[in-house]
Structures are given as structure tokens and as C-alpha cells.
Length: 67
Image 1 (cartoon, one colour):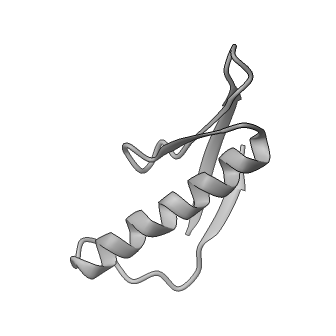
Image 2 (cartoon, one colour):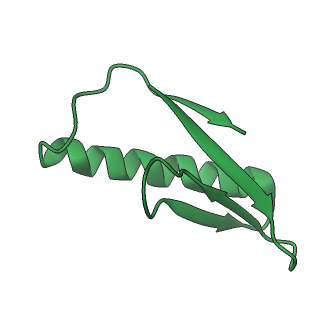
């Protein structure tokens, strides 16, 4: 499973990272690297929650790709 991450720098200098294939999964960071770290952590928590509630197929491999 490859998860696409979209990033953009806001006018105030903060970076936003979003996974559009996972509604509501969006984070901000002081820099691009921080935003990417936060979004990966959040995505893994969301996937773990889905697995615990039998809402997703078990994953064998996850790869993040920053667009």
C-alpha cells in the first residue's frame, strides 16, 4: 500500500500535510519535515484503529510517498 502525502507551505510559514485518500488526516508542522513526520504518525494511528475495529484489510506493507 502506497500512501500519497500532499504538502504545502501556508502564508504564515507553517507546512500542512494531508492524505486525501484518508478523510480528516491532516497535520501542520513548523517545517516540511515536521509536517511529514506528524502525518505519518497520524495515518498509522488511523490505520491501527481501523484494524482494531475490523474496518480495513490487514496490511502487510505500507510506504509513504511525499508528493
